[in-house]
Length: 314
Image (cartoon, rainbow, N blue to C red; front, side, top):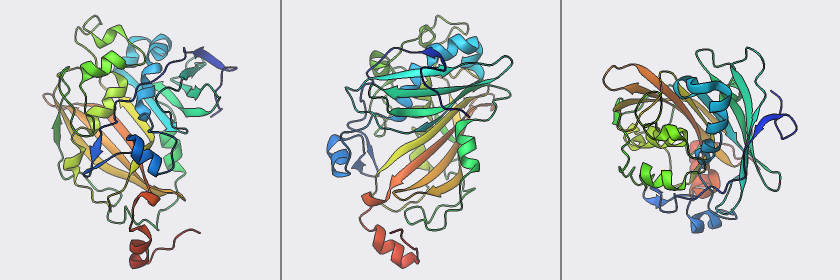
């Protein structure tokens, strides 16, 4: 997979300034990295904007590349590289679609040229080689985990199946303390299909809000990790199989741990969330989230590592 920049992009979007809507986010009883003070304490320049916020900038271009089928069987797969704070500008790029190909490269960058994300966008049923699936295939065994020492690959969510939906004025909880209507007032790129003027006659849930939908009931999954500790999204894939997903549609969610990994600074849990239509029970979408927890944010990390017989990197 080649890297993408303005010299080899088929489409380049306008500069946009994503808005921060997670300043009051809470999980595990504490504020998240999206709080300015928490981010500062962890050595970041400011509270980062959540990664999937950037997905909205790709939607008009991917609709142009793939047509309406994008909303039915589209897949975006991204590895996040640089955090963005409110006030910074971002632009999205989409690569050339080769004849007969189902996949294109995507990228987003800040005005200073730093990469925000790289990845792929594709349509099914043959989605091609996606960014996250490629990265998962290269993972090494994670045998020094501390924060995630009680989690196992193949583990299923205790709440399976979880019931979820998204209404226009439904507050999405402590993790996402806003409504879809509030998001639509600040979204980086509007699209007419977010209203009822579309081929399906029902408002479509925006791509970035599918992340909110799949995380909405995640507390009930019951995956045990050591904490309190602070995490961030390192990579994300949203795949529509039988879309679109509609506002006020009832869904069932099933979760499974599909990989565990570690780096010098983080421990990562790779979660697959399968989304089913609650009425037909048909699989309509899948989401993969690589959630990375910062080792330095867990006060007892070294103590627990010693107790578990783990070898810390120098």
